[in-house]
View (cartoon, one colour):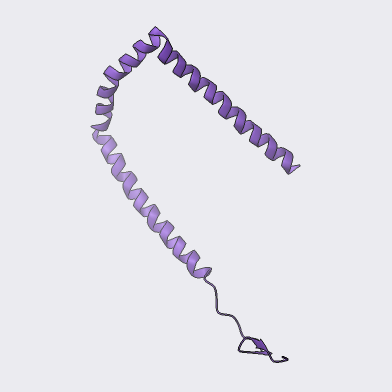
Length: 109
C-alpha cells in the first residue's frame, strides 16, 4: 500500500512541474512574441531599476539584514555545538575485553 502512495506522490510532482513549465513557457512566449509583451518588458527595464534602487537603499531593509545575519550566526553556533555533541557521542569506543579472551584472541585456541 505504501508503494501506491509513493507512486501517486511521484506522479503528482511530475504533473505539478509539467503544468508550472507550461505556465512559465506561455508567459515567456507572450512576453517575447507579442507587441504588448515587448512594451511590458521595456517598461519593466525602464522603471524596474529605479524601484530596485529604492528597495536596496531602504534603511529598514538594512536593519533587517543585520538582524538576519545575527540570527544566522546564532544558528551556526547552535548547529556546531550540536554537531560536536553528536560526534562525541557517536565516537567509536575501545573494544571491551571479555573474561575469556586475552589480547583479542580466544583462550581456547
